[in-house]
Image (cartoon, rainbow, N blue to C red):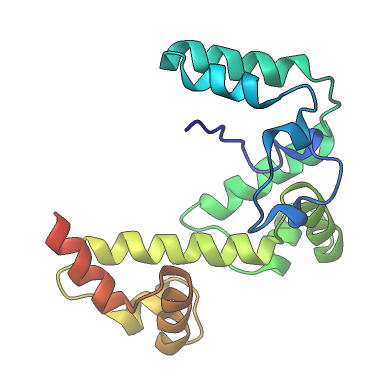
Length: 179
């Protein structure tokens, strides 16, 4: 098995449609790179890791694409803002920080990232909450919810369960068993 990780928006030049079409989908390599066949894939699976990486890098570089540089920079700036500890917690605040309208920011993210900025903001906020609670013996859920910009503890706990699949308490118990 091999995979390639792209920065947010980085795969857009290789995909002709909306990236949101790919969410939850399985797409064969030949869909993006028509010259790739089963033989190509089979040969790559037999290669040592360093050769496989070079081969996949060559495959990406050989495809003629025009990256949407302006949009990629906007996406990179937005993601950097989201990652900051004091970063924006709403699409409106993010758009204002980037001197864009909410609608234009949503359109760029939907087209080039495949999800809206609200989804990424929510995910980042939740990841921050998970990281914080993993370091605490007895997390203060209400305080954490307030610190992370949630309207209530219940909102945080519901988001957590929706994304992770279990309640935060169960997650922490499982995490501590594995450490």
